[in-house]
Image (tube, rainbow over all chains, first blue to last red; front, top):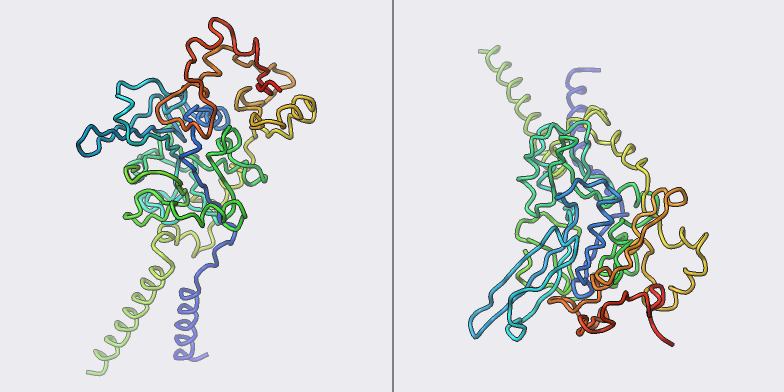
Length: 234
Length: 155
């Protein structure tokens, strides 16, 4: 083979290699939260702790309460999450007539399609799988906590026992066995929904108009969708 | 002059290849950029791309579903299936990780039931039947004195 031919084949080969994008799997998992159905009982947080051995005072999923009040002025927004909502929510010192709207918002890792946490990891210990789940290699994590700062949703926490960063995996060991994540399984009202994008019950809710994602301006393309939440959820 | 031109041609070639590589990697998408080195060299697992993934799948499941419980407790399963208390058993009973060996404890106090059924700010009346006069309704008695927890309605 002549040099010219060799260079030509190398060039064409490399071009073809880079232009062909890796085909993404069709089985993308999505998570839908209906805020109207959430009653703030905290059983999801307890189930997550039992299933994934989450250390105390750390949360893979947590529930927030948004209370929007107004006494003749513009809206006041009050957000709280006592113990991550694990033991329920207490009374508030607000006048019931002043409340415009109040609801619970379960939060978890958004499993972004363009995860900022994956981008910043200096040792590539976190990655996104074909199913769209963002995972962490605990044996490779050096515990630098860059990803905790990079995550705009605050979904990552530092596990002080194992000295690594940890996060929600959508119960990867469960969904790969055809089960639902622990938080979805235990939810008594069905506020949390999980499934593949093509699933019927997911398609039905995704066709609703009042569905939204959190922080769309960051272009992280989260795969957790919220139904019936106000503009103030952030 | 000839050897200078040759060196220039080689230099420009190298430059073109570099530019092609950079744009090629960018074309794959920014989000795969960090792990591209692993994928190019076919090294899987060393930087956690697939080895750990298989390990995570092997993790034991602690909370099985309702159907798992129904294998032994079919009567209760059928009873709860009739009403809206047809959610998962572990919501109240806790995770059944090694249940047949370990007995499951269930909290039967008033506070446990009120954890869901107390009237709270933010709780939707349409979703759950909230108890507005929870302080006086069945005072000083546990809820299970009158209500069957698996089927709390009176027919």
